[in-house]
Length: 323
Image (tube, rainbow, N blue to C red; front, side, top):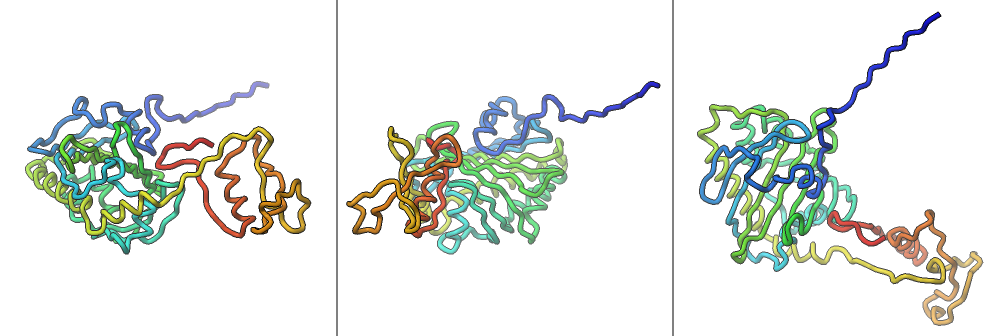
């Protein structure tokens, strides 16, 4: 007796790239991301350009390039022009963004968070009208009064020294996910910057009737960018952002794993007289859950034994720290 088995294998197209979730991903997937080569220029005017290109992971990319933006009291380190998403959200009362309301925040790591917010920016509505099916699918989400969850990750000094970026992707849109990248780059003139805004959408054609209005879109994008980068309280917010986290390092040790304060009912490994005035005379050996020592795992346990709850991370602004 013969048996016939039929298998159906469904795969992604071999040339379809995985969606980017950091500025490094964006630039590695599309090396000409911030160049003119490989892009079709829809409109170019003094200090601004609107371009589009096919997207390596499906759909189409639209790019705004805005040159000569003035950032008043810009930080000496241009990579700190954009503020981390969790700092923006937690301190929105200090430096609110007009037209954006944050409902919730979930911090993933320093410089990375899932922010649920709603927006009523006029530039969003203008793009939705003029670009029709292209940007409309993205902007309809942004212009809705209902909040949307966007995963956001800040990048510093990539791909050039002084670059400041933030990658966005939608958390709960599996069927047609959306991605966006904002990158701000210092120019040679003091307090002058170029901003790139790149949005991935699912269609690959422009609405022809809208072409005569593209100039209005560029002008609105430029005014929105300068307003965002110079909103009231942003200088103080950048200063707080710069001091928001503390980086701790530990030198190598050759006598085994580091110690932890011992609980009163715990058998101690050693006693240190110098710790007596602080209630830290008795100590035990730290036993990690993995073979290798990771400072981000050790610190919360150490502080918990002192009566404090902290969060420790092994990355900062998208860059992995020495474990």
